[in-house]
Length: 206
Image 1 (tube, rainbow, N blue to C red):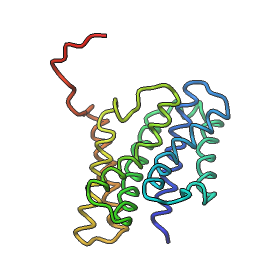
Image 2: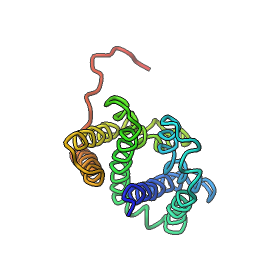
Image 3: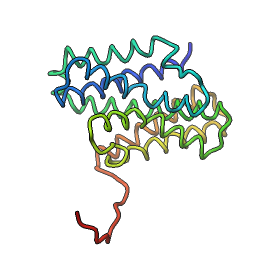
Image 4: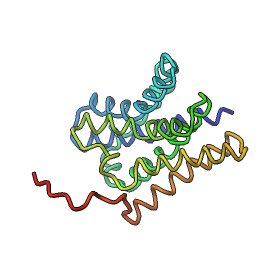
């Protein structure tokens, strides 16, 4: 059983759901919802593959990724009213997808022989790249710059994978540990409103 593929597709689905819901919130049409679903779900993975020299990116060579994206978008199209009533569930799914992609990004970076800085960067990019594309398309300030402990949770997940890897844990357990720690970090931040300190003392005014 390919645990990496299973986790990857799970992350793709929940991020497609998250992107599709944001598109529905702005009352985009069916095509807009599907485009946002796809961009959010595989954007980070495509960035990762390009940087790691995977050409073409896996999202373009394995049709199951596109089908998974479309399934998430279709859920939003047909059940957008119900999804909107359960926004907390969507936010939780987004947090889970963040943790899963952070772990996968770290695993692929380690496999490619990157050092610890590269591993953390690829981990964070894989987890947040799709959301960055989504927010830019919707003309929003990217979540990685405004959300409570979003990119930071991904970096923690990447660091956890590195620690587990150097301790000699198997890839399966390293992935599970990394994703779990990132997800828990994000949930704690969401629950208690935790965030990194803001710049203070600035005299700038708009």
